[in-house]
Structures are given as C-alpha cells and as structure tokens.
Length: 221
Ligand SMILES: [Ca+2]
Image 1 (cartoon, protein in one colour):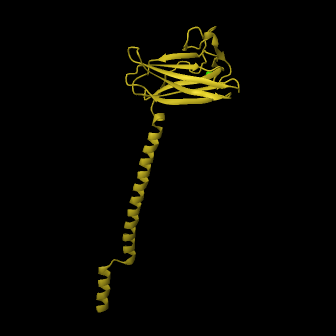
Image 2 (tube, helix red, strand yellow):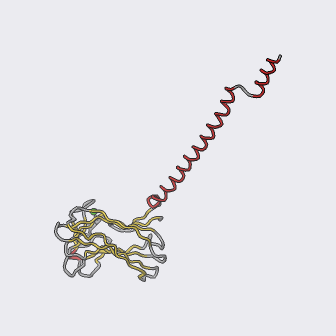
C-alpha cells in the first residue's frame, strides 16, 4: 500500500518526465521563436524603411521636362535642334548637328572660341513647381585630347509672372582629354514660387564640346 501510495504521489506531483519535457521545452522554443520572429520582422521593417528612404526618388513618378534632349530632331536646314534656342543671338553658325553621338543618331556640337560662349537653351513650364526635386543630366565630351573641355549648365527659375527668381550654374565638365562620352548629373530643389525653369548649356571654353542625352526630370509628378 505504501509503495502504491508513493507511486501515486509521484504520479500526482509530477507529470511523466516525457510530458514535462515536452511541455516546458516546447514553451521555451516558442518563446525563442517569437523573439526570433520579432527580430526578423524588425530587420525587415527597418531594412525596408532604409531602402525606401534611399531609393524613394526612383520610386515616385517622374516627368521629363526637356523637348528633344537627345538632339535627334533637327529641322531641315536649321542650325538648331527642335525645342532649343541659342543663348546669344547670332551664334547659330557655331552650333551643329553631329553624328558623333552617345545615343541615337545625333548629338549637338557647341563650338569653342576665345571670348565667345556658345550655348543653347530651352524653358520649361509644364511640370515646374515650387519645392519639388529635380535631376538634370547629360553626356558630354571634347573632340581633342589637348586642352580643357568646358561646359556649364545654367538653371534659371521664374515665377508665375515670368520674373526671374533665381539662377544657378552647375559646372558639369571642366576637364582635359575627355574624348569619350561621360555622363553627368545633379540633383536640386526648386524655389517655393517656381513656375518656370530655363536650362542653358553653354561652352565657355576654347575647344568644341559635344552634348547628347540631356534630361531634366521632376519627381513626384
Ligand atoms: Ca542623341
């Protein structure tokens, strides 16, 4: 009887070892599993947030503001590509269509000279607004390995009444021996009252410069 009582007591005080082991061990594993899942979830959430912040610009809609940025369209007999004007009157004869292109069929060549800065420009209004993020870029190169090739990109902002409200020169190229196309780009933000943006591509150097694949994008359109 006593032996049986002890046996019953043992059975009552504790569940079989295998059951305890299964229950307790399982509880610990579930706890660890929950912690691990939380860590993984945290990594995913924070990792995704960081990735989103880093690449958010590429995820929002964008709008191209330039007309004929690839310089593929040229009116018959014209020295200027469609959509572009000359920055200084009378300099059309120093601007030319070139088959030495980075993309497509044609590029534009701005002739260099002493005391002369040949340039082309165009003004965008559709899609231009205050406080937006923009990216301007192009491919450019020189035609000789000797001397310094120059190219300035000049951005000028206008308000809704057409008054100039700011200007900024972005020097994209000022290097020696660049005879293969290289891509250049820069990010910027518009002034709050911006309603128009003129972009001018100007060669202030003495050597010719070739330009192709120009773009001017606004994000969040
Ligand atoms: Ca082209």
